[in-house]
Length: 220
Image (cartoon, rainbow, N blue to C red; front, side, top):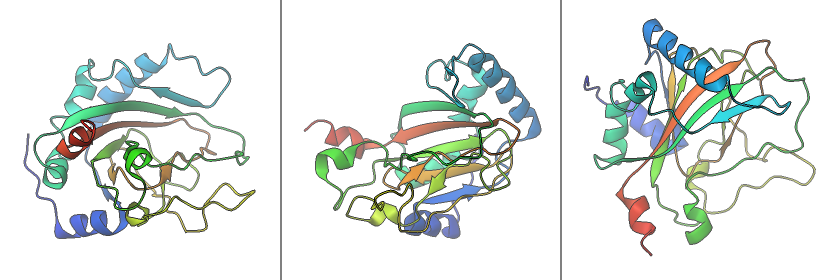
C-alpha cells in the first residue's frame, strides 16, 4: 500500500464539516474491474419494481472489492483519522437506477452506527467513518450522490425537518463527483441517498470502518 499523507486541509474539512472528497483515487483499469464485479453481483438482485439496488453480502469475497479496503490511496487517510485498529462493520454496493422526476415522501436523513440511540445526541463520540468510491459520474445535480448536512456531526440535537417537508431547515450539500473519486464521511453526520434523475445508473461502493471506541461502547 502506498502511503498518502492526510493534508491539513482534508483534516480541517473533516473536523469542521464532517466529510471531505478525495479526487481520482481509482484509475480506469480498477474502475473497469469493479464495474464488472458489481454488475455481476447486482444482476441477481430483485428490485421489486423499485429504482434503488443495495447489496451488502459477498463484496469482500470479490478480489476487486477486497482491494478497496487494503490497497487504495484512501486507506492511509482512514488510518490517520481513526487509528490502526479498524474493523469493517458494513459493506454496501449501491446501484441507483434512473427514476421519475418526483420527490419522495421522505428522504431518510440519518446518522450511522446508532450510537446516538443509546447515548443520545449530545456529546456523541466519533466511532467510525464511511469511505464511498464512485464507479460512475455523479457530476450534475440529482445524479445519485450522497447528500450531507455539513457540521451536523457536531450537533447535539436531532435533525429538525419541518412538518410536511422532506429536507431540514439547515442547508445541505450535494457533492458533484466523477468516477474514481472517493468521499469520506464520519458516523455522526446527517446524510441520505440522493435521487437519480439522469438517464444512467449511478454505481457506488462503500465501506464503514469503526475504531476501538465503537466496540468499547458495545461492551456496556
